[in-house]
Amino acid sequence: MESEGTMIRIRHFTEQDAPVIGRNQYPGVPMAEIREMISEWENNTCRGRYFEMFAVTRDGAVVGSVSLFEHTKSAVSVGVEIYPGERRKGYAFTGMRLVMEHARALHYRVILDQVRPDNPASVALHKRLGFETDGYIYKNAKGQDVLLFLLCL
Image (cartoon, rainbow, N blue to C red; front, side, top):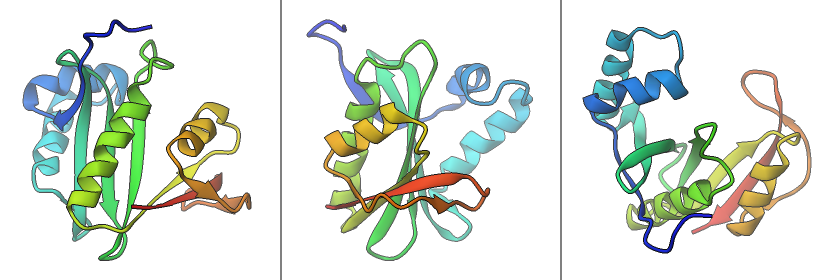
């Protein structure tokens, strides 16, 4: 359990975060490529649509990431990854809650996420945040089984 004084925040990644990202999200990827990714994230676009990547931080240290990707003018998807060793401490819950507030401030009305049905922690997280699912198993673009979770902002 974390102490009461712990500050969980989201912020944009900086070039100084490259080693942490490389170690935890992209092992084996050259630092130059990771720095290029961070630079691209500064544009807030991906494939011509709004995209924003945030670092989830605990007292300033990066513990994971959370992102938003626009699907329509009113809907965005969220993606969260908390690094091994930092999981089950509430960082995903707080990071997602903060990015949901950001999406609401940007006037999005629906937020969605695809969750693997074999990931009970993520399923429970989404339900705790108020997301709903129809319970059907869908195939994502990679051919993996996923549950679709939706939330009206």
